[in-house]
Amino acid sequence: MSVKLGVPSKGRLMEKTFEWFAARDIHLARSGSEREYAGVVDGIEGVSLVLLSAGEIPRELAAGRIHLGVTGTDLVHEKLPLWEQTVASVAELGFGHADLILAVPQGWVDVDTLHDLDAAAAAFRAAHGSRLRIATKYHRLVREFLRGAGVADYALVDSQGATEGTVANETAEAIADITSTGETLLANHLKILSDGLILKSQATLWQSQVAQVNAEQRAALDALLARVA
Image 1 (cartoon, helix red, strand yellow):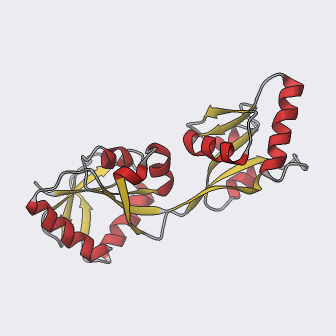
Image 2: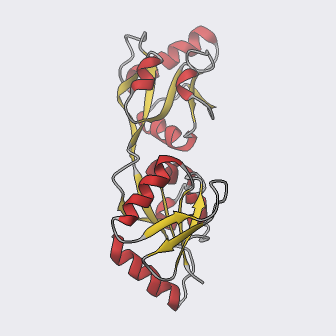
Image 3: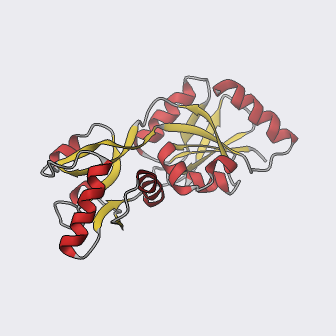
């Protein structure tokens, strides 16, 4: 049995992860076609590569089915309510930077802070008889953030597509989403609240705290961690 290392299965995140490990003389590669989720590891003994979607990696770490995994801070914190008990950060990889933020229409000139948003939400409910809708993929993180800020009169609506477009499409009044440059927000006439930063995220190497390891796996895991940590 080998130590299982889970990395994103496609796109720039996979490529940058491969480059990061290669700089430490651990060479990861796909095996087979682009449609196959199989990979190989060269440069270190006893480690096998598992290609997964970035969103699956937190779950696999928490279940102990992989020993190490690369995914964003945002996904670990959102998908694992008690993440500190199941995974530990080994190294921040220095790419995949993005902020989870709260944004409202630019036309809301009187709404710049969470306090303003709370007042706007109360006014919205009084005027429309329904709660102000915030579109997001990050329900748990947003709910905890707004609870801590004392914002109450809102409803989270699930967004699995282009969250920034939900305000223009009139399926939400505000959004909470990941942004790296802010350009898409500007293009959709949205502004980030001045105190609306929920979480700063980047690609991170995580270690499962619950995965079982035998003596052989422990030696391989220690060797890999010594190379990368």
